[in-house]
Length: 111
Image (cartoon, rainbow, N blue to C red; front, side, top):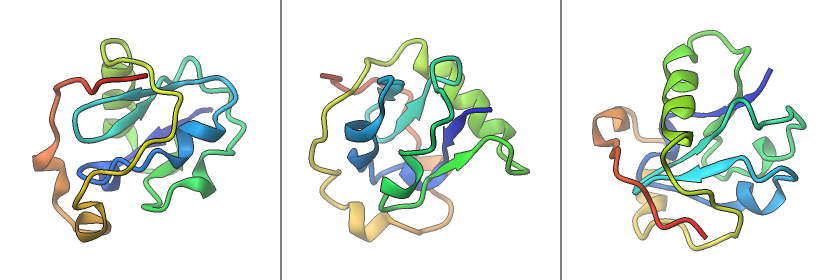
C-alpha cells in the first residue's frame, strides 16, 4: 500500500506533507505534487498534514487513475523535500471540483 496525491492538490500545491515525509517520496509538478508509490513506506504521516485533504491511501476505491498519474510523474518531476509557500490562489481553489482539467504535466523546481 502507498499514499496517493489526488485532484484537490491541483492549483493548491501545499507542501506541508513534504516536510514530514521520512523517505522524501514527493515530487513536484508545476501545479501539484505526486508521491512515488515505490518509495512510499505507507507511514501515513503526510495525510493529516495536507490542508487540502488531497492525500489518500491507495486502497480507497476510485483512485486508480491518480495512482497511475502519481507513478508516471514521480519518474520525471524533481524531488521536493522542503516546505514552501502554497500557490498564490490555493485557498480559492481548495475544494473546487473539476480541477483535473487544470493539471499541468510541466515539472516544478524541486529543491
